[in-house]
Length: 395
Image (cartoon, rainbow, N blue to C red; front, side, top):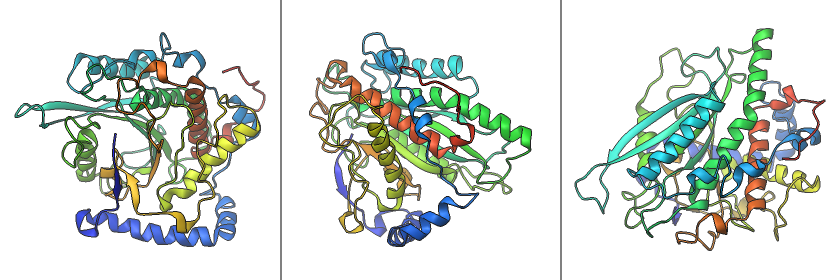
């Protein structure tokens, strides 16, 4: 991870990205007309986005000891070097797959394999293996569900020797495992109740969620268009050309992504995560509001100098053409909406041997776990199954 870049010229991007210009215009108008649009949006039965109640926010767990750097169930096993094609990466893969198969058996597991040559390996092909864990309504056919897509890369840099990449991106991976585990029972309840009522089978109702762990994000020698994002580039291209049946609502897997939420460089104290993209600023604002409400309710442990997500009230005129290059780029160029959660400025340990467990701020890690989990619950409209009689746990 990654470098700053200005927006590419229209000639440099795929034709599908033209749609982003339309979305940009609509986003401008939506912010200018926000009061009227928000009212109609919230009162629409098909498009309602219902914020979690205070009670539900209090039920969202932090993960607690599962993020312990020495023996935590989620994080400790991946605080190791995870260079593509090495035993450490295989161990990380086994950790992810075993977690979902043993604890979340209703989630499907898919591998997306590719190979590529790197500047440091000559003609030798390096394997890159993306992992996808998906939970869809049981009644949907191929290409029917719209999918909240939560993303992190799980590989680590080849240098310096022994580099772990705790913020980059072991912590984001562990957070996504926590999110999946937390939301699973609510997803099950939602599906059961919808099935009993004969609901489902319409595009707004058929919401799913997938956890995408990408390989080969890091450059092997020096960041460039060809030496970076190996797994993301291969997968975006594959999904673009993987056509669903003619009867499907969505034409391909890219089209199914309702939001591509990418986590990176999270876990250090006092993070600042800006809002880089106007078309998805509304989603950023939703997450920023969750953080604000959780702090007001004293649910978060950290005491940062300013909010993790400070751009909730960012003005249209403040959006620029700059952004941070990361795994979202191949998807965004194909028209996928992106919410990029990356600490900017980067943590002081970025790409150094000190990006390890000892330099994490654990209250910050647990707070991110709560915030992202609450966002996923809101996105999936889980107020419909709010456990009103449940008492908040300690973690």
